[in-house]
Length: 427
Ligand code: S3P
Image (cartoon, rainbow, N blue to C red; front, side, top):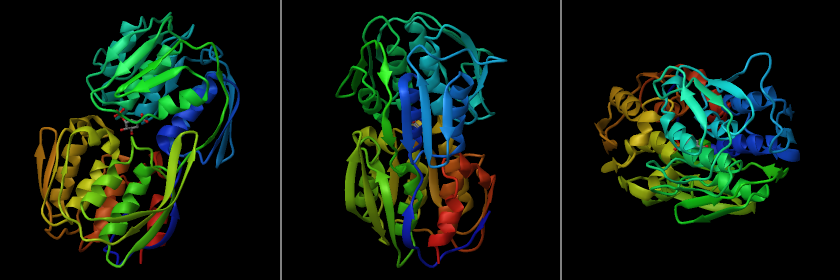
């Protein structure tokens, strides 16, 4: 895909459903009793991987495009995949880590696998706590990564203090806790996204939260729900950035999830001088959403660190790109987790922004961006990381000359139709 500088961005946009909530809807729907109806389900490749894994375990799932019906079989109703016991999670870290919590407690064994990227991502962070619960789970190659061999076992409740603020780790343990013989709790250094806790509660699990701790009681059954998935703020992020950066722009982004554990990008962009307003807000199943109006703004640098990091972790690439167009210096720290995403997002961002002429420095746990230097087009290797491809589609739309993105089709992981939406709004 090739991009040139746009003159402005105008119009209305409804971005696709939230990836995290879509995954969880299929997972909880599969182990609940009754039919869970999920509307505005994200038809991204990652969420289709979750559907495929549960279909292979005997769950009937009807996917009509916008709506997904999950005919759950109850907490103990999953079946060993047949004819082989291999479940393919594709590129999806959320599928891999969350499903482990469920599979650890079944009465069958499976091998979990995935693509080249997933086979490099750290899984010890879930292997260790699940093993402490009595799970039989190991890395087949002994390198702490997928493929993982899991044999279901009787699990015990634990109180786990996680070294990382990770919703995938927290959720994996809480899901395993549904099957344990006592209370399970997770404490994290900072609060990560809480979609699992909210959804577990609505499905009837006994869950308590306070500060950075969530605890769950063993469950007898969960019960099917209707879920309306709000638009994904991580996908809206690209249009928030584009609307702020392109001159004379005004974009209305409809129905965006604004859960406070996900809204760090709004705080940071506002703090940088961004003109972002809520036009309308609503709430369903504890997940708030808003129509967000964004207008061109002159941005200035900021410091992004500490507790806000987990609330914008997936948005840091596009925030870093936006910071190149801001006056002054932006510092991102406490974000070492970026190194273990779909690519090493610190290294890939610094390399690609530098290729476009930005003044950006890699640090141990983030980057330092000295803004205000004009960017020029370059050839960008996305490393097949969806958020990198979309970030540079935006950067390329603001830069002089032509930007070419290699591996651009990877946006289908989280935002099918992204390039079409950008082309429709851009002038
Ligand atoms: C996710 C949690 C985050 C995030 C990922 C989705 C989730 O990962 O980066 O895109 O749905 O729980 P970590 O748990 O590794 O921080």
